[in-house]
Image (tube, rainbow, N blue to C red):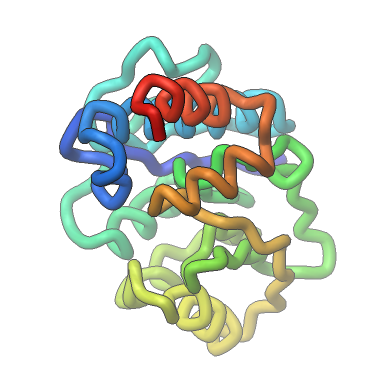
Length: 205
């Protein structure tokens, strides 16, 4: 079975979802980040997995469900931190972030039969998921992160290594308030949608 990895930051004001401010305050942005993380972890907990790992920058809180191993993120750029997450896996692994609270257990149930890797493109040009049948940290190191071409660059790296790549569905990351509104509408029954609706009412937005 596959190891499911979630790379995340502790949802503390000023450290997460800074592009949501404004219109939200830093405290409200952290509340939305916590709700997004809770939805993500809930989906991971419900998906079949050999192991579930939270690769965390910060300290775990009450939003963490049981059944997860928590490991600290290493130092360095995002490419190094993602590479290190895969380095700890000794079998098939799928890594996702905390920016897609609309993710479902079905989306996380990845079959590598006939492929060596899978990549979930994000609408902003990045990727929301990366799966490797045989984890190799070298496939991530040096890939430019957080750019409109990150997803394409990562895919090119996989293909250049001779891997057969299967594309997962496109998803929209939550970066801006417009993203938050669109994602909340996509998954209206989740904690993220509920928190987004509450904050809009409280703030008169």
